[in-house]
Length: 600
Image 1 (tube, rainbow, N blue to C red):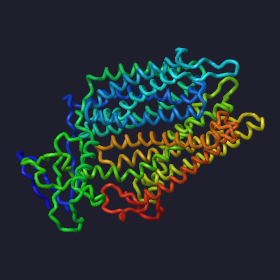
Image 2 (image 1 turned 135 degrees about the horizontal axis):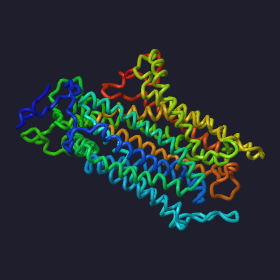
Image 3 (image 1 turned 135 degrees about the vertical axis):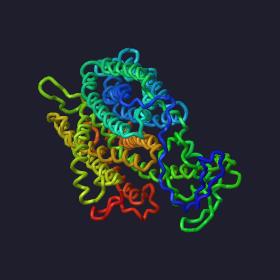
Image 4 (image 1 turned 90 degrees about the vertical axis):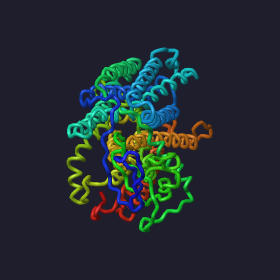
């Protein structure tokens, strides 16, 4: 049944749908641009990609070798340094959520990127000062004694990191959407331009990683920390100039309110109507739900059908007396939600368990980005008679693995697997994520075995092991990222409506943030329970001198945590209901044998 609402504008009536309606997706026109200009397309790309590339170069140039900087310049012990890095990484990956909210609801993407870029510049300049001015860092070690940082020095360092985080929180969630805004998705050329933009975006991202982990890290480690931080700062200044130079060719999308507000409105409306009884889908009933048509210029690209999962939320869309004006508009958005808002809230609830398991999946990656650098400091890093690999550069193995493996996966593995699974992607996103977790477990086990061999050789007085013995664990971790992280990104983009994909990207950042905090908690627990700070003779697994600690045991704990998370993920994947599915029984278990037909 469909009841037409009264409307002053007959051309756009408000529709009130029953639960039994067959709501097929309906496409809207593209969002209107506040500048009134036609999309500039590739004319604006050098400015947008240049700004994003330099921002990444600045922030990654800081993080890549930051562990070494804290140990060598600030004379921090490795547990304190790792804790600071993890906390800062968490804050940096939480702030894009706030940046996305402010951009969508109030400021707009252009001004968010502009202001955030200035914050990044000041943050990087402050970090350069910590290396340049003697008053902002501890004096060099002398007589076998190293003086730690003062409260003022640590305060200035943390302040600098916070300013950098604010900048990243504004640029990262807006750069991709702002780039997409420059193309017209209603034309073939515009759609092709968007695809090419994504390719160029991730290509420049990988180039930045390689440059950061090789050239920038080498300058910091072997030439000068001042120059190593000064170069990214100068590039950040260039990126701001480049970004503002493109203002005359940009198009701008007006902020239309954040999706978060609509989600809260659903929760409030459902609670207010908690005593309303709903019939089942199969029951012939007269209950009416509020389902207005898409308005011209709406950011919503497709409408979602009402489902029977999480039925209690459907109450938010039930039309009650005096909740509609004569023109069919709502009298109060906090009392009545649209079907679209209700289903968007359900999308968020559905992915929540998968998202939680993703937090634990990233924990091994976070750990290897810190303690592995400490291992590299104690290993033979020579290539030839005169060149030493910077410790942080060893991480580049993971990114080379991703860069080489992803094309092989797309061109060869996917067609091969498709023959057995009949799935267009070879395997589903959830299967891909599960494979990534397995590689994470293997990587941490291998890391523990290599650390045990390194420690035994060092304590026996033998020569240092080559740093390239760390290659297997970084290779496996690269495969973990290629499967798990890319699988997560694809999964969120598929399961969220088009206009909520910014939220999906924000959730990915939040996963990294929370995994950083989980890593910090794990480090502090192990450090505290194995003798850290005590004089009872216990062996501190995470001792400053790795040769006296048992880092291998810690790696095994991380591996065990990842192994437990694998089975937790299997349970969540088995019970996951894809967007648009009416019941969980319609789904095959995500990790079922390839002989069974898999749902698309």
